[in-house]
Image (cartoon, rainbow over all chains, first blue to last red; front, top):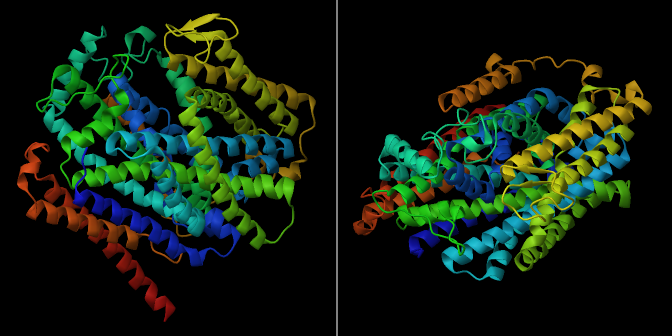
Length: 568
Length: 71
């Protein structure tokens, strides 16, 4: 790939704006609330777009395109089943407690609802996770830039770290949110023409379907395996994902999806920055609208690429092979950028890709600096200092967080297995979380001891399940079966979904059991934190009926159901 | 929040749109073989330009609506 002067100009203009926004916001950062929560003053459409953009990191874009090629249309389960219902639940049922309790972070909510040890467990594991996620994002970006543009690993890392550092250091969460909105539009405008040109190339939608039928048949599946979502989910062997509908609905749609969207501070933080309760509740609902349409932006390219590679597109787009002979699915987006975009558009596409890597890092860094400052530093290291002190601590945490991410990126580069191992550990820690929040928000009897030991037991159950099962055709070790192989799953995805289901189930049962024999908190301490002890929210004065969360939520859910039905 | 985000978004896309459309109009037309013969820079540049101007128009309208309140 050889970008021309026009491409570099486009990248330069974008990064000038990114830094300019940070600089322009600096004078608005007077208190720690400004810095960590944007002064709780942002309108819903902005927090909504930031909410979705914080999740639209480059790994998401590249990974979903790769899954589109590997699994076809069924990848949209990660959107229409694995995201929309949870986002609606967050907006309608959970946001009143997050926003209403004035908790400044998700771990702080756990402190208010349960106790110090539950908060500490969540805060520390979350802080470690964000630093590594941001490092992995940096590492992936450096690898891609090396491949596409021939940039040196260290140069890419330091340059991206510097840009993210400057704009968060200056403008805090507001800067991160504004840049996420900018990146949202950049991604949409950068990738939409890619889908258009790709579809043109394979002969439109009908040409694509015809090509994918051949792909499916050549791999031994029913002809519609790459173009349908539910009708091929009756058995694991009838679809390329190797899963059946129950693990999609329970593992992905319920446990994993609700666990991520409803409890991950990285996304919830965007809603907490909204200017009112109504705006906070609308945040995930507004975000759900573009989320519902993203499959057409990020999954379709993968489907186009595989159809073109195996069936022969008019212009000869073909995925490269990896060293072991398998198709390199991760190259879908970079390959198509280089294949279809002339100089000019190429600059826009590359900018969109780099922007999404950087917002992926920035989202983690803003979540890290907040959790570190409020939930670790203020809680355990220095209590009761001035607000000025915590604002400065936030800036120091930003620098330190980025420094640690750089270290994590180098660690990933040196020892690839360590990163796989860490991601596995994070999955164990995250899997049971939703059970804790569900019981905490909707059952006043749930006690702090119950929550804490439930979380530990759920994490242990996830690890045990992973250690006792193995995806078919894998070696024991990091893939599973490191205790003994009691059960073989048809695919790694099936194993992941069932790990989550077991973790959730064990956490739920242990939390209930321990809560039954320990004392709950006094009811007056739980007002605003638990459903049955919180007065119902009335519609805000002057709120138009179509802007009410329940109406918006119902419309969004209906949209997701229609999409599931059309592409069944 | 002090800074209306529609101003930087609008300005960025106006500049990017003008750059792309201008390049599509004046640049070497042989590069469009890869985009299936479509001058994608010109067309998509025009779309970005229109989007950017719409964002600026919204920001301008909001600023005008705020002004009487200040006076």
